[in-house]
Image (cartoon, rainbow, N blue to C red; front, side, top):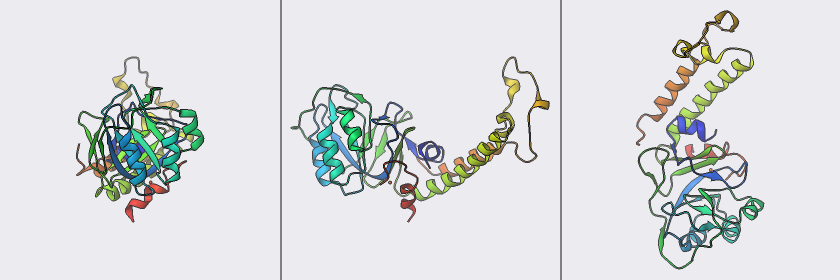
Length: 250
């Protein structure tokens, strides 16, 4: 399961400005929060030395965009010490070397200026990241972070099992819809859409394949997502988070 399905069912999306440094990068792991002083990455060096193997660094740099906070040295060090991935709301550098290292890194941009290694910050304490919504996104140690080519989401600890259960059901229903589309059925019928709201619509229902009982299939999918999100307030795989994301339910 990926970030799109998880976000549909209660996972909290990070901002849309984050991107993977290399195509296909993905991970699912527990969060180890890091807060940097803008322009300084000392806290990331400390986090690499202290974070439990198998965890992911989630780094708050307050959106500062002039410096590259993660470089080849940090990427190699993190990978060697068992860090699963890094997410930061700031810039990275040495992206070709990071890709060769194969450590999944998600950032907000690329900057050539080197960050200092002197100021404070914090590790292992709650931080607030740039969200995919109107409010700051809190990240605590032990939350689950899932990242892939579509984005990054946070699964709050204590809600991981219910989110995953809803997501598994949602993915199964969506797969049925995709199979029906391959079979030639109309998305208008499958998704229960009202085309009459669009100017210029011409009813050609006789040309659309429709199977009884298939109508509004995605409506059920959305209902599942809504149930999965109820009660939610506003893992180590480098190629696919599918297998790792099942671990939180254990």
